Length: 137
Image 1: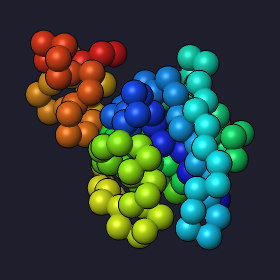
Image 2: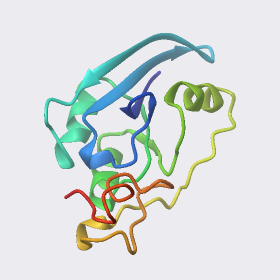
Image 3: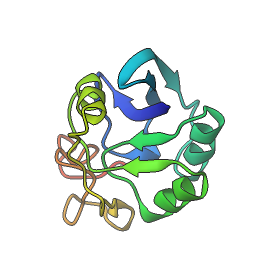
């Protein structure tokens, strides 16, 4: 099984469509047997599901993610665990133990906003917090 985590500075990146890296974990028998960090080479939003499929990913763990990307992942046969925060390696450990806290109804709707109000891309609202409330488009 191959699991991808949206990745930045060791943590789960909070906006799927803007992730520049994934950390990939190859797992067998409840253990990580290989891990690697891969760059998305500037691909974003819709192209990322194809990128993950090409990489042989079975499961994606991320922070916020829009409905269109969720549909594309579903069509690609990639299982989604969204609304996750924290250290990527710890998240994988917790997932493999069967205890991952995630939001099955996660959504990222910031594309309609220029400010942080109504933003729902994870707890730290990456792209808004620390940017004077303005979301990165």
